[in-house]
Length: 330
Image (cartoon, rainbow, N blue to C red):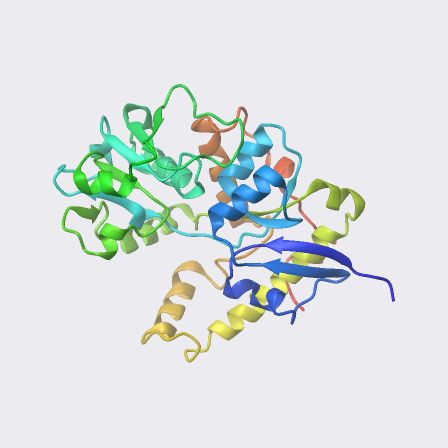
C-alpha cells in the first residue's frame, strides 16, 4: 500500500474539526497530525515567523498583510473562526462616550494593530458609523505577527510600555476606549468603570448582518506553497474533509442534549432563522466572496496592503466543474 502524505494541521480545538482530530474523517490520501493545544497568537506567530506547520488556521489580517508583502503561501476557502465584534468595543464610563462618533479625537487602545478582530472593528467604525479613524490616537499592547510590517504613517499609532496593561489603562482612564478581541477582565468582573459601547450589542450584530449579509471571517486556512507545488490535489481533498467534519459537527450540535445550556435548542433555531442553514459555509460562495472582499477592502483602506488584491490571488478555489459541487454532500 502506498504511503499517505503526512501533513501537520494547526488549528483551534473546535467542534467543527473534531472529526479530523479524532480521525473519524480522514482526507483522501493524507495522514493528518492535528495540533490544537496552542493559543491563536502563538499559532499565528509560529507559522508566520517559522512556517512550522503545513496547514494552519491563520489570522485573516496577518495573511493579507503577508501576501501583500510578497509571501507566496495560499489559503483554502475554509474559515474556522468567525465572530461578530460589536460586543468588543469597550469604553471608560467616565468619558461620556455614547456612540461611535464620540471616539473621534480620543485615545483608543487596541490589543494589536493587525489582529483581524481589530481590522474589522476599525472598518465597521468607519463604514457603518462614519468615524474618522485618523483623528484617533491609537495605543497598542502587543507586537504584530508579520515581520517588517509598520502601521501606515497617516495613522497615529504607538506601542505602550512593557510594564503597562491596555486593560488597566482603560480602567484608569488613560485610554478612553478599547478595541479588543476578547472579553476583558473588567467586563467579566463587572467593574463599573468599564462598559460596552453598544449595550444591546447582540441586537447591533443582528442588524449589521441583516444590512450587510456579513458574518465576519476572522481566520483563513493557509497552506505552505511547496505542498501545493508537489501535490496540487491536496487542496481539493482537504476541502472535502473539512466539509465532512463540519457537517458531522452540525448534525451533532442539533441535539439539545449535547450542549449544557438551558435554551440551547431555541438558540439553534434562532440562528437558523436569522443566518440560514450554514453560516459557517466554506468555499468562495457569494456570501463568503462579499465577506472576503470587505476584509480586503478594509485592509487596503487602512494601509495594511499596498494594493487591493483580487480574491483569486489570495484563495484557492478547488472545484470539479460547473454544477458538480454547488452543494456539499457525502
